[in-house]
Length: 39
Length: 502
Image (cartoon, rainbow over all chains, first blue to last red; front, side, top):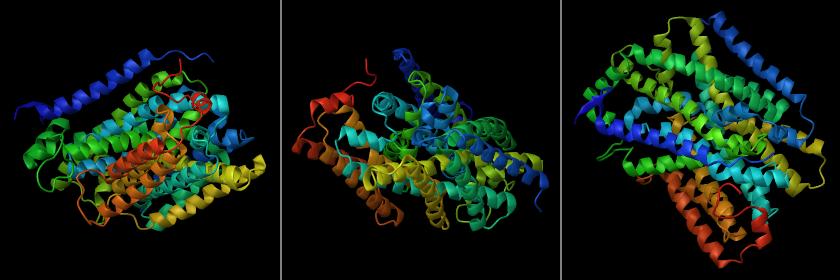
């Protein structure tokens, strides 16, 4: 197993970091997709 | 020996909460003011109310405790819980708010009653289920308050419970959602600043993030993997999937979380709150988990000794901070931070129980001609009653706080997710289907929870998933066998495969 960063195996970095970035991307896309609601 | 500065800080914090409660009480004229703050919450108050509602005793004590006990395989909790806010807003909130503005809804039960044309049965069942699951969850929150007060002042468990409950009850009873929302803004800011300052110091005291991971890896290489495998492993990939669903969807449809979406001033807050709340709360959650990992080093190296109690792992962050900060004043600040996190959920849960009883059961079922003032009075009395009953439940907490809190979320997940999702998105969903899904989801999740709790048989996934699947089957089968609702009702309640009405 390769220790890539922070004393962690690569699979941990990829799985956790990847999921975190995916969440950010999905929520940013939601904000861009939003259509303003008139008040 | 109790330090006077510690007491002063905690007392000042309690006085600030009561002060906000008194200020808020002047704004309460009717049930709409009490329950949804007159639909007046601004962007940041709403965002922090959502964070504060999902950020519970689990967040500061349970999250670190779980990290200390099982290390990296528990990391998914750090994504799932912040994501629950986004799930709630996107999949439930956008539509429910639009319908509530049009129909004047105050609670989720109002939505159920209209969408499923069931003014009494489904409303009553949903309100009772909401009260039951909120009380289970609330018992976990009181246990967390007690842990902090026991540690700080050396109070006996029951005295600590009583003090914590008394403060929250006072400001919730007098100020309703105005008080809950504004105290949560204060509590959320305290929590954010506090964790961002304190968690890195605890991690640093254990040698820093990289050194902690290297230590864990040397101790047990499996502890730095993102899931566990093999005989006796708890956080297996299949368990993590059920755990993710439980936390993301379960918290999103929890009564004390979903009702917040009805209180915003402007629907356009739903655009950025999901991302902003995810980032703020994600940072807090990751830091807390890493502090729990650091606790493994501190305990193994003999730098920290946990107390000899059955829920010892829940004390890891508290003792980690105590070790890392020499100043008593900082401990007092820390106590305020933990109390802020716990109280921000506790008050919302109590208000939810009071509202469900007074509005959905008393006003809408038992006494429809009751005046606004009498409903308000019943709501306040219900909050007191909820506090009293939950205190008794919290007197004998389970070994790990987090398990009690997860049990509460799990039952919410199995009970409410299916009737809500089907009601909002599936036009064929019927009243009978919703009643079957809600009642079978509640009963089966409690039954499977008992199987886990009493170790009758090992389950490969979290027990709530069995309840959720039972609810899905019940909803689909019973709905297809019964008469669909009228098209006008489905149009009025915006039912269909879309999120934002265009």
